[in-house]
Image (cartoon, rainbow, N blue to C red):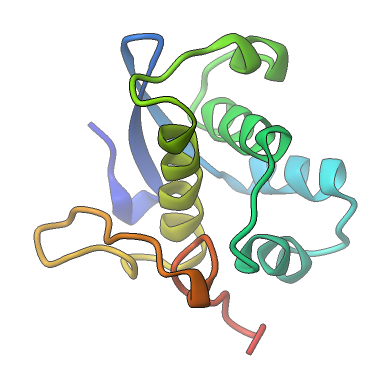
Length: 130
């Protein structure tokens, strides 16, 4: 079971439950692939509320590897989610929210709140960016 206090989320991919977590190593991996020098730059990229399929593939892959799975981005690219592309965007939004926003972006029941475009894909600004 995913622990949001540790930055984890759960997602269904290929009909299986996976835990995803953007560890410090996973964040460093994303900084490198997206060409950012720091986490503020990385967070700013996603704060705009726009995400490409390649972005989703990389973030989900990093989150899976951060949680301990040995899964390449190429394997992630072939994964399916019931509900299609919207589910992949939701996975990324929840993962970024729990990573950069702590417990923000969740309802009182602990469920993710709907994305609010004005606040970016992660639902909350990263500290120091505003």
